Length: 126
Image (cartoon, rainbow, N blue to C red; front, side):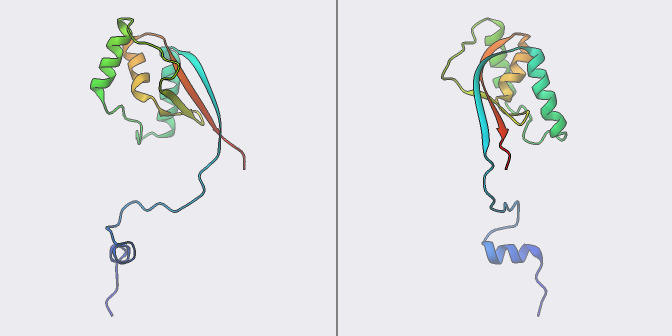
């Protein structure tokens, strides 16, 4: 009987090529606080730095849309960036950025302070 390698076992049992396989686990529960906050370049840099410390290889944090950052920064520099109370939040989960990285990089590029909705999430104790 021929030995099966891992890839063959995955194809046989899952019907696809091997790759990232996620085990099912209960989703974590978070306490959430949403606030309207003035985000300065210093605060944006602190959040970005904290995220880079956590993900030193940049995984899930590269500002991938440079054109978007430049567009946002131009609006911010020209004083045309508008705060909307129903706008997208900048998400900070357990101290790291999980949403809004392009807007934070635009703050750095524009050297301006902007008002944003910020959603702070902290994992609940079990």
